[in-house]
Length: 116
Image 1 (cartoon, rainbow, N blue to C red):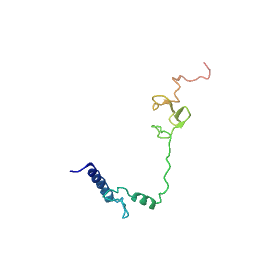
Image 2: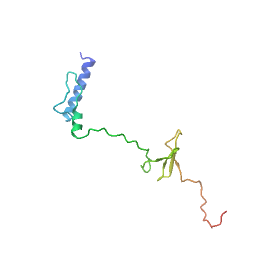
Image 3: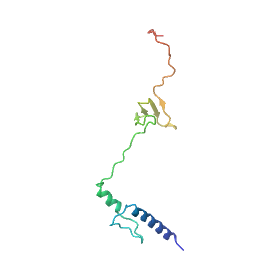
């Protein structure tokens, strides 16, 4: 009868065997089937590649899903200048934009140069 600990060890050993088969471990691997389930193989591989300083996280502004460019923040809203769209902050539907170049119905008659 196998205990939960036996099942856990068997699953750990099976996962380790798969990663060894994939070439992710070296001859200095500290892994032991008897219960030492940690090793430094990935650290040695990373350092050998010269990757010794952790990268920084880059925070990006949201993207407009029409032109896929970053939008600008005005303090009150996000704006995509290329698409002429603005998203106001603090509303429940922040992902719904409004056109910034929509000035209502324009008179389509030609202008004769005389103000009305």
